[in-house]
Image (cartoon, rainbow, N blue to C red; front, side):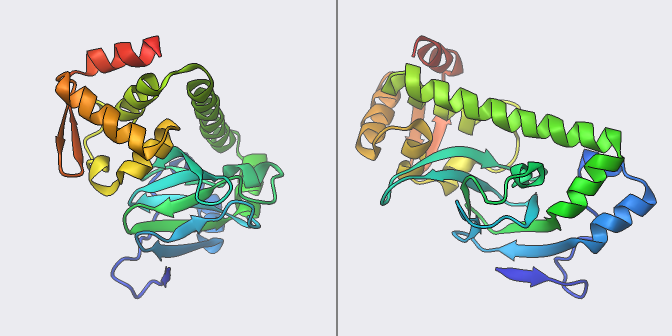
Length: 231
């Protein structure tokens, strides 16, 4: 982890997110006064489940996996956090600790913003508040979808849904499969690594995907959607 200062080449002057573009000049100055730009290296923790949360993180560049940690080495990968998204919004709404761990899949540039500054803006600026609450609700919706997948779907349905989630049709950025291990994919699907490897080979045999080293290329999205739907 490295703190980035104004003299560094990697320093960002502005937070490029729609919700911050709604702020007045004075409100922007409040955010700037309460933020710290930090570079997290690949593999480092941005947040730790159960740790005290005094700030909200805004992802500027890079990719992060959001993890619910269990006993021992067990865990469940909840989400891929992409540039333009937040971590730790629950800390603004009365939660004093992080509900999950967040681990950098690549080098990640972030802004750490004091949660009190975000809370003040929510209280004083209705448009900003609406944008933040909308994002918070979207995160809760994702959580409910993840629980539904674990409760109701069989292994092949879980894996098909996971592959579709990790490779959305409308996303043109980094191929996320190149920075994920088979264990990572298994923990997104909520199944064992061994079962994930076997099912991936079955999907490839059936012409649904193509495996190339770490990369996974989706060949038949409609068939994967049907497998996911049937569960």
